[in-house]
Length: 127
Image 1 (cartoon, rainbow, N blue to C red):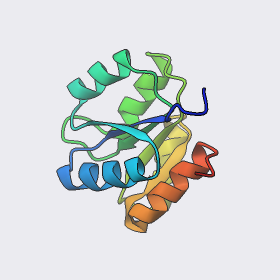
Image 2 (tube, rainbow, N blue to C red; image 1 turned 90 degrees about the vertical axis):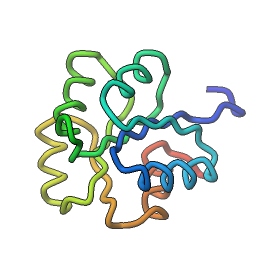
Image 3 (cartoon, rainbow, N blue to C red; image 1 turned 120 degrees about the horizontal axis):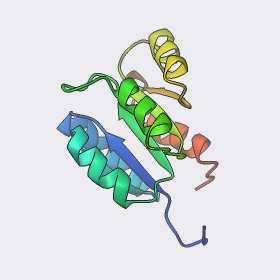
């Protein structure tokens, strides 16, 4: 990746507020952020874009995000790191991420600053 290219993050969450706050904070941190509020939007973005990270809400109206993450990884062959993003407790998130065979999780309860810091760690950015 060229030095001037911004890393691309996809956030899939049904909460307008969460999407807006996370998108703004991550863009301020230097990332390009794509958002999806449902799985049809997710499918359109995922097929069209090269992504460096996917953040997937667990409790979505249509399906659980960990199930979708597992399909993205196993069926669609997505290689970008996939992290669950939820307000569920850490033990449950860890178990769900492990069962879905994805990369990990981020707790919404920790706040937006913690989200940005964790994304930087995941993407090995010192921005």
